[in-house]
Length: 166
Image 1 (cartoon, rainbow, N blue to C red):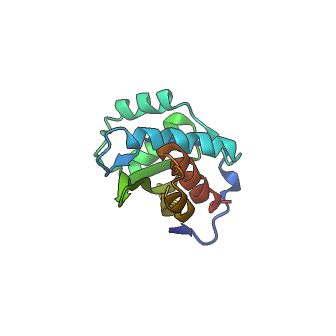
Image 2: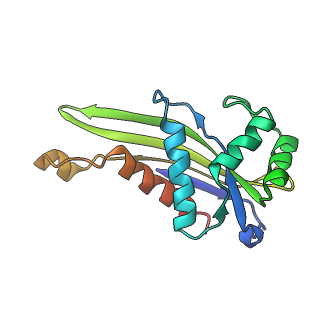
């Protein structure tokens, strides 16, 4: 399942470089947000969407701006961060599920993620996409094949979400 939104009349070709901020983690896995942030950065580069600021630089600026992991960012803070990093837009995300489901003896990963692209000058949301993906497969269950792992499911989901931006 997947849904996406692109602000009407917005041409994203002006965006050359983005910063991927720390993701909010609403899952039970303490490291899910960091894993999905890394995968998102990799996929943005792999798809040739934008250049990406190194996450260590982003984290230093977030620390300077005293932005905690559970703090919601207001428009003025977002604009300051974008200006300081020299980016046209920011990518923020929320991990809504990162769990293993069981169906009888068959277990498979489920990942749910929301990504947003925020204009660095205005602080407005330009694009948002949410989706859920799992490693479940009927053939896998019937024939005892191993399901996709969390990494495979995560890469697939992030790629599908980001492709709605093209």
